[in-house]
Structure formats: C-alpha cells, structure tokens
Image 1 (cartoon, rainbow, N blue to C red):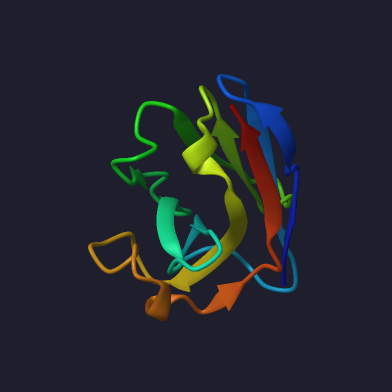
Image 2: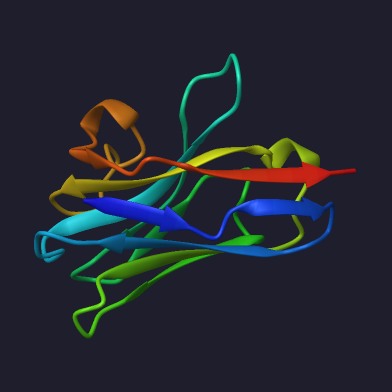
Amino acid sequence: QLVESGGGSVQAGGSLRLSCVASGRATDNYVLGWFRQSPGKDREFVAAVDWNSDMAEYSDSVAGRFTISRRDNAKNTVYLQMNILKPEDTALYFCSARYGPLNKYSKYSYNINFWGQGTQVTVSS
C-alpha cells in the first residue's frame, strides 16, 4: 500500500514536499516514483528512485527543480521535493512502485505494479 501526503496550494516560485509511505511489503528490489495527471491529460512520469542503488531519474520538465529521495530505516518513505513550482506543475500526483531495477521502462505508467491514491498540487500564478 502506498499512501501519499504533502500536497496543497502554493504560488508560483514556491516549494512543496510530497511524501509516500510504502507499507505492507519490503521496498527492496523496487523502483519508487512519482507520476502526475492533469484533467484531460495522460498520466506522466515525474521522477523515480531505485531503492537498492539510490539512482534517480527525472523527466525533462522537472529536472533541476525537483528532487526525489528515499528514507530507509524501516520507514520505507519516498519524498519529492518540489522547488520553483510553476502553474504547469498543477496536477494530481501519484506515488508508484515497480518491481525491478531502474531502467528505460520505469517511466511508463503501464509498467507500474502499485499506485497510491494521489495528492493534489495546485500552483497559482
């Protein structure tokens, strides 16, 4: 089970941090990540981190502004620090888990094994 928190409303240029707690199973050998979806659009990849290697990957639209990180110590939590937010970042953000290593397939939503319920991020201009 993946449970997100930390969404909210912020003005452009501001920051938010999303959290996702993975419970019920070990996160070893999983890639945990974030996708987002705006009304009328497909769900798109934002960022992902390999739980074993700690390697991360970002979409071009957020690289340099967002940072994904993980917290072990039995907390099994993944974070998404979002800085310099833009109105186009407004979306419902979903936590994701995919079994296997971080690779070129990690950014495709059809490969995801588990989803969270989503948390809304709204950025006003």
